[in-house]
Length: 128
Image (cartoon, rainbow, N blue to C red; front, side):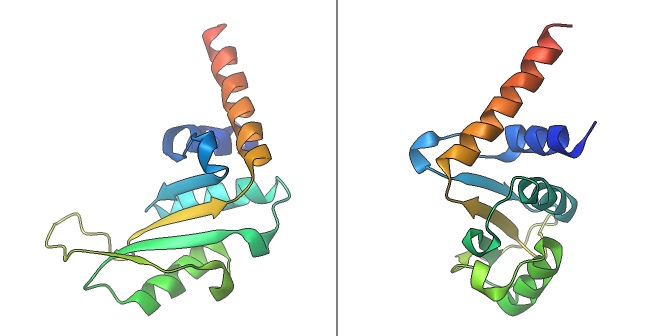
C-alpha cells in the first residue's frame, strides 16, 4: 500500500466528509496517524501557512507542553495553531496526555480530491 492509499483510508475513517464546511478536517489523538496524514496532505501541495491545528485538551493538561508535542508531531509552527478547546477534567484511565488535534485546511477542491481517492479505493475493493 502506498502513502496515497494509506492517507485516503485514514481520511475515510477519521476525516470529515461534509462539503458544506469547505475544508479538509482530520481529527485524532494518535501521533502516528497524525504524522502519516501530514505526510499525505503535504504530497498534495498544501500551503503550510494555511494549515490550522486545533488542540482539544483537558483543563488539567499543560497547554504549552501539548502544543510543543503536536508541533513536533506535525512539523508545524505556532502560527498554525488556533485557540485550543479545553474540556472538563479527566479522571479516566484512558486520559490522553496530549489531547486530540484537528488538522484543518480550507479547500473544497482538496476535499473532493480526497473523496475521489476514497471512492476509487472502495470501487477497487468491491470489484474483487
